[in-house]
Length: 245
Image (cartoon, one colour):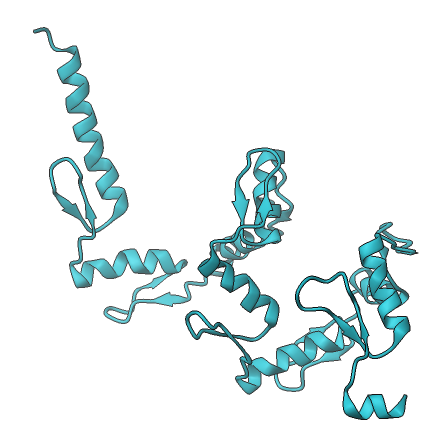
């Protein structure tokens, strides 16, 4: 057994994990893993009822309730639930991105990020909404989308009580209370809450007019201005329909 530890050999292979068969150092680790395929989750959280494949997963989950984060980064002070998460985080400081896309050469910190990215190239959207049929690249995107159907807004601002669909929307909103405007224009120094607002502003400096009317060819620097202009054509058509021959 000690020879296996030194050679990093993993002789116990799972035959149910698709093309990249998962391998394990010990047979008992393989047996625990195979509970996932059998749907066995014997270990239940006493606080929320969520079930887990093994005791160690349950122990890690308990830290969510206790707010315990025992693994701390010595460089930035950020804390983590799991040792593996800390090790992954430390690669950010080291500048390591070992996972490279064979299609475009872009590099990623985690294999899961690379796999998600590669769906852009393959066009794969494996997560489908059962209510409207819309498909998504990631499971979190599907979860966020489902809230549109349920009306759920689980992220609440502690300052004003306003609720949001996504955590990112709440973070963006909280900048209003904090007075944060992190996106600065390199031409004039004006600051903006969102990157898209900065991009719209910078068109003033570049004089770029990328939004063109299909009906008359007039161009606009902002999409909102194009939409306002298109209403003029819509009104003209409406007047034409109503006018007597």
